Length: 276
Image 1 (cartoon, rainbow, N blue to C red):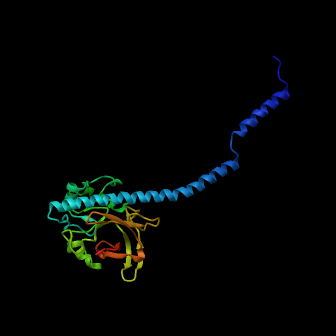
Image 2: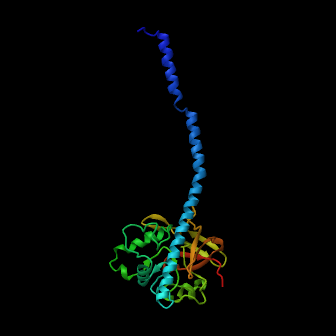
Image 3: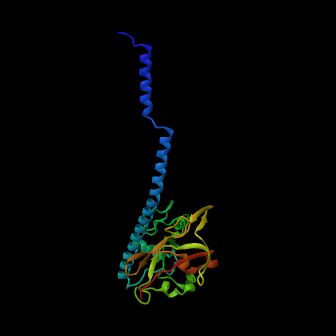
């Protein structure tokens, strides 16, 4: 077989190198691809964030409707009364009798070594702070005799001794024992529109921090949060069993209760239209 001339071999070799080189990317092409990916990500991430927030709102709404069904079932078995929460403290700590109601009609809230999962009906899927605080009772051997925590504000069946509920004239609202009556169209459960600081009910001014501390870590205090930790809004459950979403506006919010020196400076807000 006759050997190829040197020049022919060189041309053949350079031809293959050129073909192989054309299979790769140049630096400019790579930068263009990265730029396109960054632009697409910038367009998609806000949409994904909104979709996630909407999914959490829907899951939270489902939780509250399950609460509503359970309360209606309890009322049917107990002369149209709400579950007893006379030992409940503030707005989210439930008395032991409420834990029994959960176990019999809704879902048992057991002591856990880790935070409750996202689908736990007793906690809003976006609730972080109360999932952390819920674990405090794990080391207490008498925890079953003491108040337990929920990831919502549950209102009826309380007593005046557990907090100063009349700060904004809502004492009769949270003390009611039976369904119906004067507050039949008012909410009985809501998301936690909760922060820390001071706020004036009269002129809507003050300073509210939407984060708290636990074991040296910053934990968001409210649910359904914006990037700054403030609540976008919350779901509200009514005693007829329906639940609905209301956006939150701090400048148009009503302070439900300022617990003041009792538990630091927690602030809890609400303001939604109520049909008579």
